[in-house]
Image 1 (cartoon, rainbow, N blue to C red):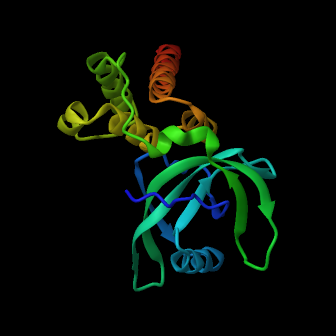
Image 2 (tube, rainbow, N blue to C red):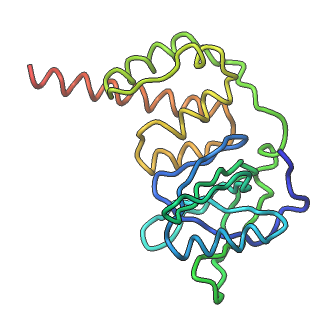
Length: 209
């Protein structure tokens, strides 16, 4: 992944509840609203081709998002754009810059997240077998499926970040996963969220009996 140097001070923002992009991951998106089609057109003309994924919070936006570079795009017959974002780095949002464009532009700061543009993170304390056992129970209870052979063989960072992005978690939970400083802390949080969901599910089942 080519990282723009230096990272831009301002990027287009795409507020989307529940959408999560994490370091070294890819996020597929469908873009169809006119303002975001305009955003994509402008981004593709820029040198960095970066979009900042960020979650709405109340009447504003969360403090931390993650920027991705548009690495693939395709227009459908209905005029929608299918794009792929390759994560570059998380950022801290400063001010939202006013302008004539119909979408938001954010003044952003990258310095807290230098690890995002470095090597793949390692979690030496990760115990894959018990983690996957809990995950299997969680997936069964939520009628979800996955490729278990791939999950068993995937690099730890790829596994944890992919699950954080794909599992049906609440937006606040996804934001907490995004803000976890290290892979180990994200894995601990994700494991805790899975265990909590299993416990709540078991309690609800007991009440129905």
